[in-house]
Amino acid sequence: MNNAIKEQYDIKANKYNSLREVLHVKYVKRPSIEAYFSFNLKGKRVLDLACGEGEMSRYLYKKGAIVTGLDNSKELISIAKDKNIKFDTDINYLHGDGFKLQNINQKFDFIVGIYFLNYVSSKRKLNDFLKLSKNFLKSDSKMIFLIPDYDFRKYYNNYGIESFTPKNEGDKLKFKIFHDDGQLGIELECFYWKMKTYETAFKDAGFKFREHALIISQEGLKKYSTKFWTELKANPIFKIYELSL
Image 1 (cartoon, rainbow, N blue to C red):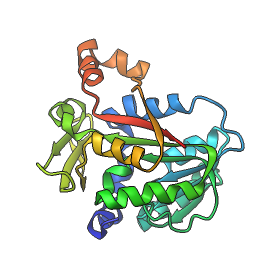
Image 2 (image 1 turned 45 degrees about the vertical axis):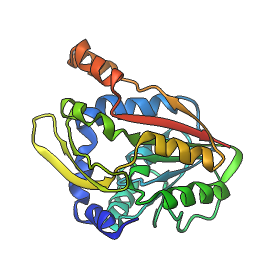
Image 3 (image 1 turned 90 degrees about the vertical axis):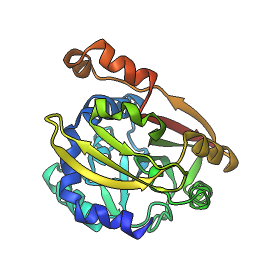
């Protein structure tokens, strides 16, 4: 991962940690991922890439999975380890570059990357990661990636996100995430890639893939109008892909 991109999470770790309750996370991202993992994960080995402070890792652990969390930010891994004690979980948190799968030495039933692939800095690195990941998958394993679709950025403001998308793929992209009260939560950078670029890379690496529909929580449906969510369904601000061999 690009050093400047990595360092932003070390510097802003506590701010990032506060984003669990922002609109799109609370009412769309979280219920969509939880809907995918609605089945029993007891005994399944799961690798959580870009695990951050461990929210997704803890959810998977509570579903019965044996979880390893990997993140490039030392600060976020430190927070995640502290929360192991707070939430009485036994999750193996590791510091390392997810795109190089550093410090990983076993195969997994699931590899999960929530807001992970949008931090890859080149098509070559994306292809290298996908090929490398096969070494850590079983024949029936799945990889699940949630990826922002920045080509729908004109709809972002409705859902607490402001994006400044560059013209060219591979350029850095700045975005801001706001709390429900309109206060700025965090400003970050990643890289701009079209969904078609990801899908082509999946195919070229030998993966089959399918897209999963977004789920809006019942709480979100009650709190906001039907029209409010209709726009998101028609113009999804992120996509969830399942990859298999």
